[in-house]
Each structure stands twice: as C-alpha cells, then as structure tokens.
Length: 121
Image (cartoon, rainbow, N blue to C red; front, side, top):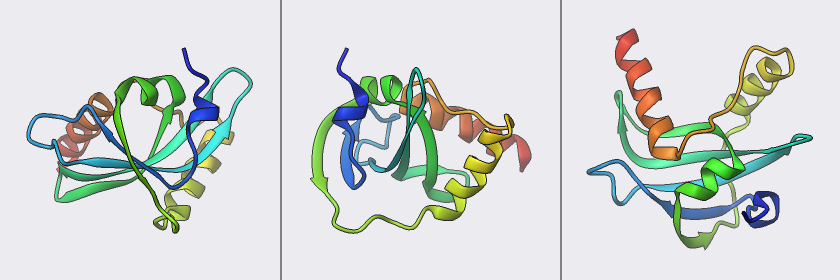
C-alpha cells in the first residue's frame, strides 16, 4: 500500500470511481489530518446529484479508502475552495468524540450520505 500522507496534497483534483451517471464528477483534496495510525483526508466532491445539491463541500475520509477510489490525477488548484466552516464543525465534533470519518470508497460514502439526506426530507 502506498503511504497516503505522501500521495495527497491540498489542491489536488482527482477523478475517482463514481456512481453511475456521475462519471464527470471530481474530488478536491482540501486538507489532511494525520492521526497516530491513519490519515484523514478532507475532500470536496463536485458534479454529483445529492439531495438538491451538486456537491459535498466537506467529506472526511481515510487515506486508504480515498486511495482505493482514485482513477486519475487531473490538476492542482492554486486556490482551495472555501471549506473552513464545515471543517471547523467537524473538527470540534471529532475532537470531542462525536464525529468520525469515512472508511468506505468515495462513491459508497456519497451513497450513504444521499440515503441520510433522503431520510430527513
């Protein structure tokens, strides 16, 4: 296995194994939190259909799960999209044991989030 911490850098845009019909979707690496035994890669996903939205602005995922999802590197952004609000909320919850991060491939995490959103509507 590659060391995810060394592969990923904020600003990277990747193609990944998408859900059906979302083949043009991309993900962007926002920031990285290193844990003792894992790395949490915070990503943004664009070009999807989820609830009434076409993107997820902040999705924390393990380096291994992210790595298993990627298909091709696209480009490196000079400027990151804004994500501090979602990240700060997550970080506060995570530090107090009330939030986790995804350990599923990106498409499966999106499916799970989609189901949660539909359940609330």
